[in-house]
Image (cartoon, rainbow, N blue to C red; front, side, top):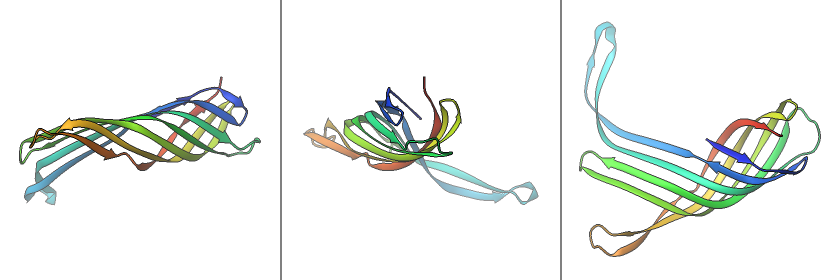
Length: 167
């Protein structure tokens, strides 16, 4: 989920600020028993082994350029750079261990997409993006107590779909 906004420098170039929320969750479980219920419906009993959650917040200044003209579909490209924050948490139910950490650093994104004009200055948009960032934090090693610098690779690709409008 995200929002980008800013002034149009002309009808094809926009400068602005964008904020995204990127979420990924994962659960690991194992089947402990399987039975067949009424009507032959399979029933699996699962035990959760581990759970992890990643929430990432890129905050980027950007420039976006679209092709001129009044085509039925308007292609565009954009690039942005700025600060990114990643909140990582996880639980290992087998060992009882938990992890929570907030990592941050500088990163960038590039994207390309197409806009379908609806009416006036309103458009449906769809785009693919590439995110690059190495995010870090200072922490104490739980085994030795020594101060360490931990990093997380924030690289990834994704797709966004939305609605764009101008004022």
